[in-house]
Amino acid sequence: MKRFLFALVVFAVALLILLISIFDSSAITYSLSQVPPQPFEGSKESEVDYIFPYAGNVLPDSPLWGLKALRDKIWFGMTTSPLRRAQLALLFADKRIVMAENLFRKGEHDIAMSTFLKGERYLPIAVAEEKLARDRGINTDAFLEKLATSALKHKEVAENLIQLAPDNVGPLIISTEVYADNTYEAARNALNSRGLPVPKNPFDGD
Image 1 (cartoon, helix red, strand yellow):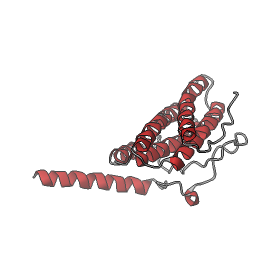
Image 2: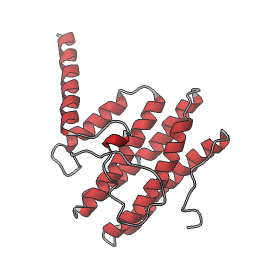
Image 3: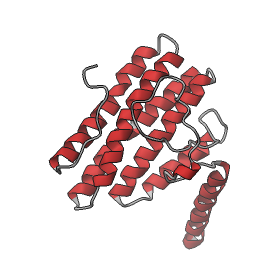
Image 4: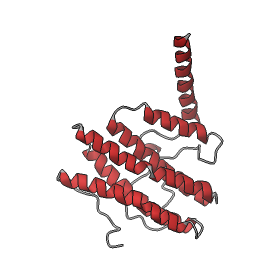
């Protein structure tokens, strides 16, 4: 009976992941062939060359969002490689900032801000998992460069979000930029320690 129940739980989880994957057309990689035009192009000329992944059709205002969020937690929890966990954390952060922008444009400010905050909190997780991978001797050079560039893009987008958000939300968005700032600093220091080039920070001197 115990084996049967365990098998049933595993089957249910697998079915759940499959269903959410069907509902969510987002790619699990950064394949440029599946990335739509960037939604932030109209705000101002971009200074950071980084393409966000497609966020999918299921956003936090959808009744299916709870299942999608559960899928992400299961996906992350079942991943054992620290480098892959770092990559997933960055993927989740990148997708959620795109979702937040979409929600701000739709006028759903409360859920947009919540999505933005939760997404940015994935950045320090990516930093911690990358360091764990590096300490284990795993080559994270390429990921560090992506992480640093993504952090700069997050900061750039956050400043664009201020223009879409109500006036009283702007200070909270600004205070949340500390996640992107700290992530860039951690990635920059790691790259410097390995003698690798660091993505230029266009916000130096702000």
